Structure formats: C-alpha cells, structure tokens
Length: 113
Ligand code: DGP
Image 1 (cartoon, protein in one colour):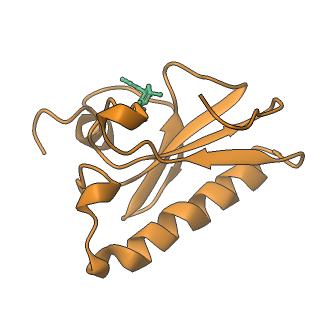
Image 2: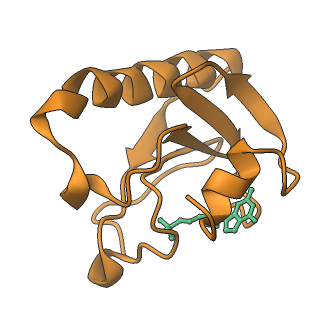
Image 3: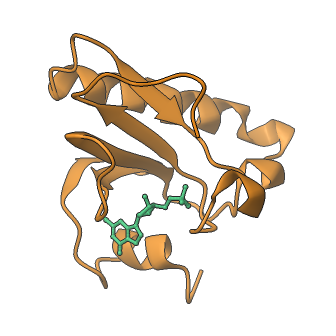
C-alpha cells in the first residue's frame, strides 16, 4: 500500500536490516529497539492491524507466530522472549501495518506499561 512505511520496507524503498524473508512474511530489526533484540515480524500483504484480520487470515497469523519463534531461536533467545501486538492507538500502535514485536535479551516486567 503506497504511503505505508512497512510496505515501503518490503518493497526495498526504505532500508532495514532484514533477518527473515519469505513470500508471505518478513522480519527486520526495529529502528528504535526497546530491548537488546527487537525484531518486527510482519505479513508482506498489507493488513492495518489485528482489528482488520479476517477468518481467512488464520493461517497467516500462525505463520507470523511461527516465524517469530524461529527467529527467536536463530537469535539465541534461549532465556526467553516476549511477543507483542499493539493494536490501535490506545495500545500504542504507531505503524498501521500489522506487526509482531519480538523482544528479548533482557528481563521483562509484568504488567507491561
Ligand atoms: P508500534 O508502535 O507497535 O506500531 O511499533 C512500530 C515500531 O516500528 C516501533 O517499535 C518503531 C518501529 N519503526 C518505526 N519506523 C521504523 C523504520 O523506518 N524502520 C524500522 N526498522 N522500524 C521502524
């Protein structure tokens, strides 16, 4: 989708450190990391947020979580990691292209802020 930051990363128009790429999913390092390892896992098809997901996207959502786990393993996050999907402005979503945050490399607190 033109004007979408993450679609422009997928298209190679904006540089990013890509750690995983397939036809349906890519993963790249967050530009403003909140943990020693902070990677975004996103669908290559534009979906604005989890609130816009359809029943037909079930397999794609599974792929996002599966890839996040594979990337966590590749990043050697053996002590643990956290997946976060900010959905909507009140939850802090700032980029409206569905993404899973993969955070690791430090102790996480609960409840999150
Ligand atoms: P959220 O706030 O949940 O919508 O997360 C959006 C994330 O996107 C945030 O952690 C910062 C990251 N981000 C914003 N702009 C860029 C960019 O141009 N490149 C990369 N790699 N990450 C970005």
